[in-house]
View: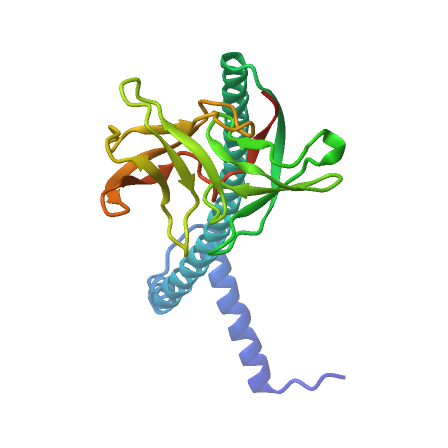
Length: 276
């Protein structure tokens, strides 16, 4: 059995009375200034905390938003790099096709302007030193290549001659090799001076044309072509341009320095003249 004393009964009655009054006021929508004051103080107390929480939330969401934006930018950067690489590859292919087209046009024009029989070849090796200038091509005896055949560029500039023939490859002695010699003639109609064109010696870059008669009319800027006086080269192959003229053998003859037309360093493809 519950044991209620006088104090307990009074306390219980007071609590019930208070709750009844509050319930009555709430149901009848009657404001209580004390309760309003309490709620106002509670609101003012927690407002800074709520503002701080909201600020921290905004910063955190902003950080992750920026992080996601950076990741998007990185991904976009990767995509653009791939597109640029693809464009560069396409550009290289187009440039290669253009170069090939230009080579074929040059070859066709050269064949139409001359009665030579030529065979195209690719440069597959280079064995040049300061004293020896040679390249290796992918044509040999099985292709009809023979020793001493002239080798030219696609636009008809003299490159050199076949120096060694293998089954499927050959060595070409370049026109700037120290042992290379070919008869040359000035292509100017009012000159036609002749001489011997020799390869560069001792690492010098310039070829020379010597044994030119002292009274022959030669000048800087003249074009030198093969003379055709030997049976090894057809006449008229362009070799070089004269860059300097000096007296030689104490004034008995003249000598000229030459700038070759063929770029023997970067050449990639050549034509071998098989018949002329």
